[in-house]
Image (cartoon, rainbow, N blue to C red; front, side, top):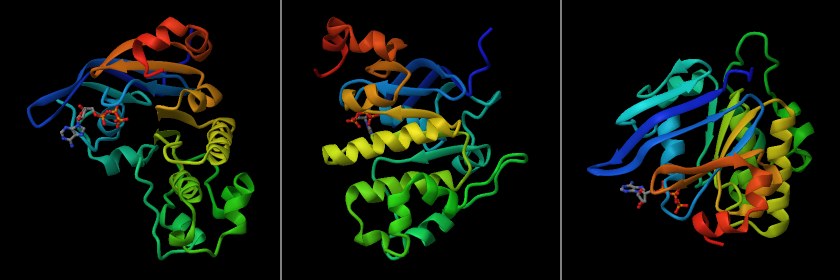
Length: 238
Ligand code: ATP
């Protein structure tokens, strides 16, 4: 049968104050897969990533990560189990160089896995290597986004959550970001992505889960979605 999913979310419910944002949400991500969460503004994509990472405590439901239910656990504990998170507001340390930013993200690798090092990162993202001494504050938005992804890799995650990595980037940089996501995939890292940009999603994702008002409206292969205009019209702002 299918391999056990890296992440399986079931019955996920979350609130901000008294407002219920996620309603009985379910989806799963298979090992090595890139799954994209799609949906209109306010559908609950960011909230889902925050609830999975433990930054927002779920009110109910299961977040099973590599076989263990982590719902309600603290983010640092979830990170230690091998989950990495790159928030929408790319936070790099402006006063630290690229290399120092990477060192700040370094966490031990799980036994038996080759740890990420700045050298390994620079082999994967040569542009970061060329800027290794540059302060984070003197990089473009796209370069900072790349650095935020690379710094998360230094934590040796097996699953990376990416919140709208293409947002606000020039088209050429969006392409570089898509290459970076595909590079993670080639390294065997599982990716859960929240996106609005359907082109970007189409370039990197294997499968999509469409959210509508905090619940799963549709899930399936990326190709099926890209070839179904009625489906896109119904759930996405296109
Ligand atoms: P976007 O792309 O606009 O970020 P999204 O699909 O990621 O959309 P969320 O950011 O998860 O959507 O927001 C889902 C709902 O939760 C929205 O109605 C939003 O207004 C609400 N919301 C988000 N953050 C908060 C908060 N801190 N307090 C209260 N409500 C919030």
